[in-house]
Length: 273
Image (cartoon, rainbow, N blue to C red; front, side, top):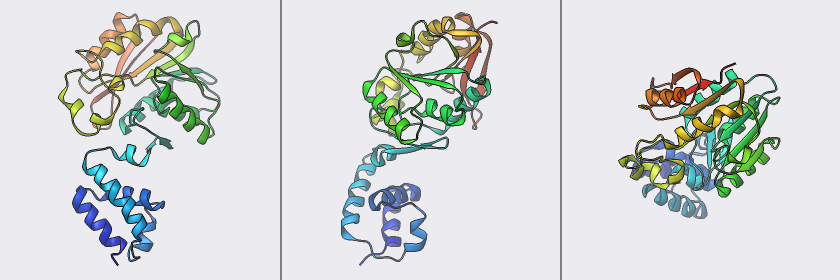
């Protein structure tokens, strides 16, 4: 009978990625990756291998690992993800870092377009004193975010269904954060890799990729307290444009922060005091 080590080697050759092979096998067997070190010589059981082979076939066709396993790690959290939600990415952790730096003690923060709840739940985990609200136009995505909040014991996060700030008219916040759609509608990358499987409404935003960034900037200033901040993630080549949008909407102290690969990633501005 074929052992675990051989199964992993064969899957690595098929996928071209050892980590992906390990993640899929761990998911099929219901174990963590550390288990392989102690059990590499164990015989592979037929039932588990049937499940594993089906997962490898799905990945070979391009389906994202996160959708196959139903989970994705972000910040210090393991989140449920589904095809109704964007897959959280490491570069978005910069948005969380910048938000935590600007959120005052006991502050109110809203995450617009929360998807799986990644940003809102990461902030709530780090700042139990904060009032955290998460909004999404997709009822399916909100259901995923609510399940994540419940499983992570972060049920104090409030969820609202609607388009950007529309369901929160009249409320004021110390901080508004968002990872909105920002890819140009005709960008060829939308038809490549993992993006092919993710919800288009969470990815593309008009001809220049800035339609939703403009909408958020235009409506956010009136719902920030004096000195409150708006922070938005955007594409690597949109820093100048994003700052221009913020300045046109009346924001002060605009800036752009770069991610670990030294690419423009998050821009923000504050309401005048």
